Length: 301
Image (tube, rainbow, N blue to C red):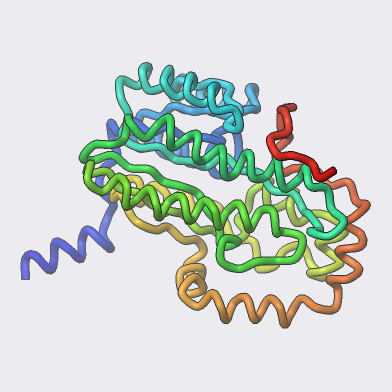
């Protein structure tokens, strides 16, 4: 009975204390990363931050007790290695890394700009890989943890979101693979799956003429508050959980993704043709402006 009660408390009770945990957060200048860093600091964790929006990042760091931070383009492997090494040194070690940095931009697969897919994969997939590659040796210990921010888009795919969905499905695959590869060290790996949250990424990602033509509204589902997602991430970091979802209904939908995809295919029919045509000429921004970097993929002749 006592063992059963202990298991119940671990699963449903108050999360273990994260005070003193050394946690690195990427994409920490705004949105999920900024909110998570502030909450972790408020609850006693020691955070280190990296991102590309220096003014915003400096403000988040100030709010986190002058936490160490660095400008870092996660698409640049040498820069990621150098920055993470420096931040880990300032923290005196590392207990967890949150690979959160990501971008989104609409892309019609036929007639769209291939550079959008290249940039999305560079940031969302290679950026996560470079982060894990640099931070991995520092968390490969009993008590270590990597938390990768994927998305419901990894399982349910929408028109014009092919680049983003492909990148988040890849993040899902990287996380599941890393979990197996790190198991012998005692470290654990978790993956977060979120629907549309109340962040600037959701507003900019769906706030286009093409998206509105397809959806007939501002987003696919009702935008969920950010708070429960941040609470879920904090619990995951405290418990080294395998999975985080927000809102709650994302969990069952992941199990029944085939039905969810069928519902999307059936529902979003009437506006797709006009929406795709608009997207081919509409100038839509990335959800976070990106630095210039050399193209990594070869153009067809």
